[in-house]
Length: 264
Ligand SMILES: C[S@@+](CC[C@H](N)C(=O)[O-])C[C@H]1O[C@@H](n2cnc3c(N)ncnc32)[C@H](O)[C@@H]1O
Image (cartoon, rainbow, N blue to C red; front, side, top):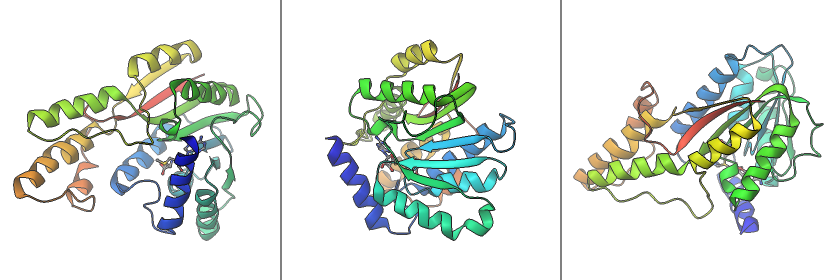
């Protein structure tokens, strides 16, 4: 199964070539994720040259956007898909003038991170819909334990990952409007929020969950989906509602995708 998932990401990277859809078809959601990470890192007031590592960085699209918006920090992206990393390295070379300093991308596995960086050397670790690709909760929590080892004391792990609680809330709301359930994709394993919180509280000093994409999901996966059903149309990620929905202020807990802010 895990080989099939890696093959899937390698294939997506090759098919997408230079298009921004290698890691998601919902490019507006990804813009919201980029903004959310950027603002969360800005709020940390890190010293210049602090080390930020994006684990499961895919084609580097988000890593580079965040790096461009935070020019004083040092970014590295890691992904186990060789094809994703090849695209990320090309993108970084194309943006070199705008970035003003190197952003490094290397092949590495989230389940074997401890050899990649010295223990206690990182200020911030990011994952964006990466750990949901691991095939068991044991593998997911072991990867989080490894990420924790790499952080400096006081360092932050900022995780954008998917949780069953948000998925259930979304599907309950959809069902109330006669919309069919959105299934979890074959290559994803969502976290159970209660178990996640309990485990994170044993590792991290501070644990916070932010429902940053809830209003976006409510607008696009409930209201827009119902509108499409009423008109007999298929939803389209390029519809303007997505551009409008990223501007909505936070509301509710209707999205599986949440931000966890974890302080070592
Ligand atoms: C949904 S994509 C997200 C990519 C990127 N974070 C973004 O937001 O655009 C998931 C990424 O995680 C990577 N990935 C999955 N399992 C991994 C693992 N065990 N180690 C490293 N990368 C992994 C995949 O190759 C893929 O690029």
